[in-house]
Length: 179
Image (cartoon, rainbow, N blue to C red; front, side, top):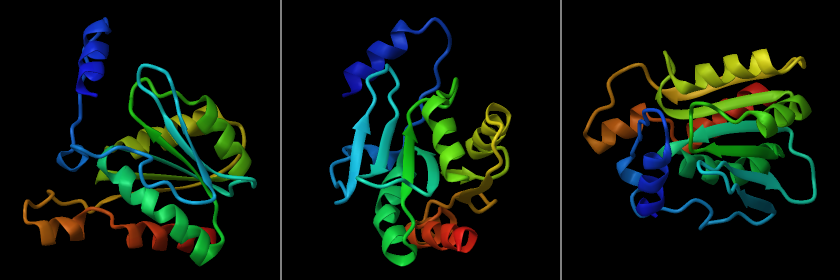
C-alpha cells in the first residue's frame, strides 16, 4: 500500500531514498507461494519477508531485494528439484540499516550466503551485505554475489534480459558453488 510507505517515510528523522522497480508495480511478494515452504512476513516498519523450507533445515541462505525477488522466488523450487538445495531466503525492504539478526543466524547454520540483485556487482548492496555479515559472524561461510553484468542496463527488453540475472542463471550459479 503506497499510503503506508509514504507514512513511514514522513515518520523518519533522516533522509530516505526509495528505490522503485517498474516491474514491482502491482506485484505482491508471497502471492505465488511454493508448496513445502513457509512465507513469514515481518511487522517492522520496513519488513523482511522470509521464505523457509517447511519441516526441514535449509542448507543455503539467499538475501535479495526489489524486483529480482520474484525471480529468486521462482528459483527456490528449481534449486530443490535440481540439487536438493533448500534455501532460507530473505527479501529485505530496507538496505540501511540492515537488520542482520535472523540473517546472521541463518548463515551460521547453512555456511552459505548468496546475494541476488539487479544492480551490478561493483559497489552493489550485495557487497555490503557480504562484508557486514563477515564482520557480524564468527563462523566461516562461503559467499557468492549474483548481479547484473557490469554494463549499463539497456532499455530494450531482449538486451535487458541478458544483463539482469535470470532465474536460470541464479540457479546455475548456486548449483556451481554448492555441488
